[in-house]
Amino acid sequence: MPSNSSDRTLAQYDDNHEAEQKEELLKPLYAPSYVRDPHLAFRMRKRKYIGLDPERPLKPHERGAEKFFWSRVRSTLQEPFSEFLGTFTLACFYMGSIAQSSLGATIPTAPGGFGYGSYMSVPWGTGIGVMLGIYIAGDSGAYLNPAITFANCMFRGLPWRQFPITVFSQFMGAFVGTALVYGNYVAAIDNYSGHGARLVPPTEKYTASIFATYPQTFTPKSSQAIQTITPIMLVTIVVSALKDDYNNGVSKAGGNFFPLAMFFLFYGIGIAFGWETSGATNPALDFGGRLMSNCVGYPSEVWSAGGYYFWMPIFLPFVGAALGAFLYDLFVYTGPSPINSPLLGFKKLTSAEAQEKNKERRVDERNDSQNDQV
Image 1 (cartoon, rainbow, N blue to C red):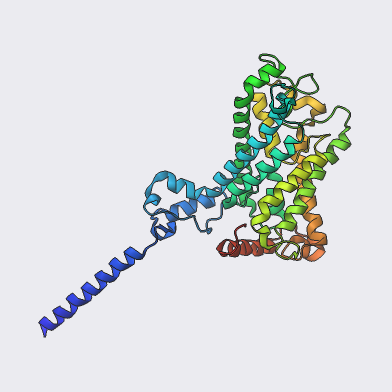
Image 2 (cartoon, helix red, strand yellow):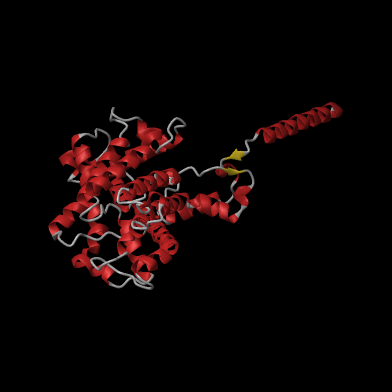
């Protein structure tokens, strides 16, 4: 009897060992981090501490990479890093197109002899920058704009606790992107304005407008305000439509064509609202670029030019984005929103119930393998 029992135990051990070996061989090369990561609980606490969703599934790593310090940092801060790099890319294309069309407009050696670009280069550069930034920042939602982030917190249930870290990442991306564009074009700026000259509008041969928006001298304060609110209002209306699963005019969450649609949207904004106040729509780009230009030698007039216009493109886009989201929800949107609640949402604009429903919807969308844009 004892020998038979020992044989059965040994056979059972062999079977279990073989099953474990097979399970190990069948494990995917890229397995979810939470399956193997012993530091997961600590990282989730850190995410919650800085305002990120601690329950969001983390991106998978190549097997074995989760033990490296930077791999853990990157997966923990995937949303801020995505917003930083996406906004950085947007800033480079946006400001780079302005720099080339401004500084190289009269260069006779350009192909065709008509200079390196014209104003129409700017809408192209902006649209391309937005499109590529969205591709890069898909892990975070690709907001790339504090005003759009604000509207999503107010009307689409993006947690308010996530607002500060997201906006900070966007600002830093714009700030670093501005520095790169300045470093790339510093010699051209000297060639255009004179060595060491850092000029602000309306001075002749100014270049500060490469890095921030400035109003035309004839534009009164009221027109400056309207010109700053209107473009971002239209942007938010269109973004709300593209991301509206209840709208039969577009595919789910904008589909794969969402980045391309955003290219056309910002191209349209550039050719329709790019004159009087330079089409200011993004507080991160404007504040980051203005601060960087001041840091690299542009005078304090970057803040006082246009009758202290600087505050308008920093604060009024929030008004425009909220207004655009409000109008879309008021007239079109039938999903969970403060507007679709008692008293049109005025009783409680930051509806906890609406935020919870939208959070559940975003989680479902992230888990939907058929949905590429969330």
